[in-house]
Image 1 (cartoon, rainbow, N blue to C red):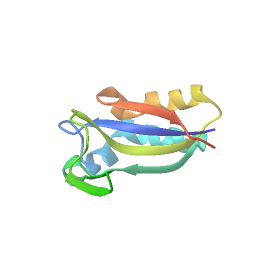
Image 2 (cartoon, rainbow, N blue to C red; image 1 turned 90 degrees about the vertical axis):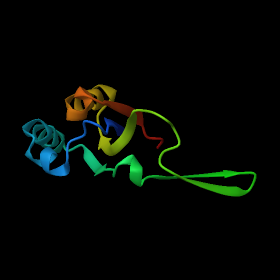
Image 3 (tube, rainbow, N blue to C red; image 1 turned 45 degrees about the vertical axis):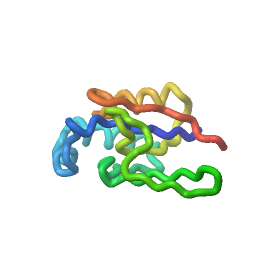
Length: 111
């Protein structure tokens, strides 16, 4: 079954890409997912200051800078996994370093 992990990040404490590459906890998580053969796609998103939100209301396209919601935690990345079941997805999500200060939301994919 496919699951998407939405990696929710508090950008005030978010490490740089270089710090992530040097972080043994993050590298161990990547190695674990690769060992399981579960990662289909993974991507880190740029900060919310680079975001653009598009909404269409009454036929008018409204474009605004940043995310739609006012919140401290933002989706900072996503991972698409192939897992045996939700328990395996939870095991993978709980090992993600961002689960220590942000959060990892798990959603099954419609198939």
